[in-house]
Figure 1: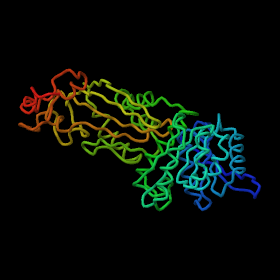
Figure 2: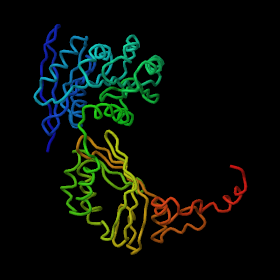
Figure 3: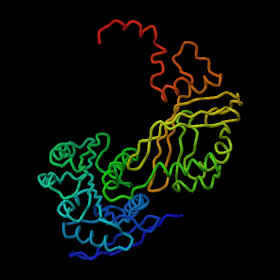
Figure 4: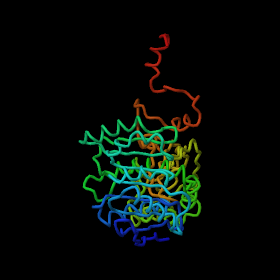
Length: 384
């Protein structure tokens, strides 16, 4: 289903009307999230960030302006009055508006503030706030921001999940699209830390393991490419890291799935889950995958004719979600081990393991240090 593009709204404050935007998850409702930005934020950048949080499952009221505590309270009440908004509201604020948001903290179930050194003047209030607060600072070449982060870290209440994050590789403004200092990699890291308290307190609580299971069901069982793509966002990507296989964007990824993945899946393939580690917007899945090289497998062995040999690989998947849709996959395995097992890589005395590497993931009591037996013997009688 195509995402909602949002609708304009005008809010009456004491100083006059302020235009804003309401954007909602494709389900039609979600926890209310107030997004506040500086007055000079371009409309298209504000809309882009509102769309991100809407896709994450929220009903978003986005405003760009100058805010006092009264204006923040009015905005919070306007948000909760929207039919699409559910539960207690939360607030994500960029810049100086954070000072007013902290003053209106009783309106919110959680607050996340970016690049707000002015909060040092309210430092003594932070530990007594009625909700958790997460403060994030880009500190690159900005000593004042680093100093503020250090000072505020001692004032928050970590027992309720409050945190202060400093990003030394990022300058203030790194977490807002359109800002010349925007850094997509660090913004992604900061976004996960933004979602952690919000998801924990107000939801939505998505079952990422079940959502991913539905995705791979269409990859390996129904072999339905359209159904596979329907589990993903409009602009997804997949990266099989060892061989650079996959695709970026809908059309490239669908082509990859249709011609180089779904119909190439081995008919003799098994996987064993070792661990599943969920986070606020992603899940890490550790597997042992066992399959027969019984046909061309472009993502594993591009250009190598089927050998008929069995392959066992320890595999790690990092699957990121945006709301209830897959956003991207990073898939890791030991390509040296894979090539050794099909007999096309002669490793000699090199420390490259075969199927025993995957088997030891399943049973830690199997032999250790098999490539360093001589070195291991030198420490046998040494004190420990």
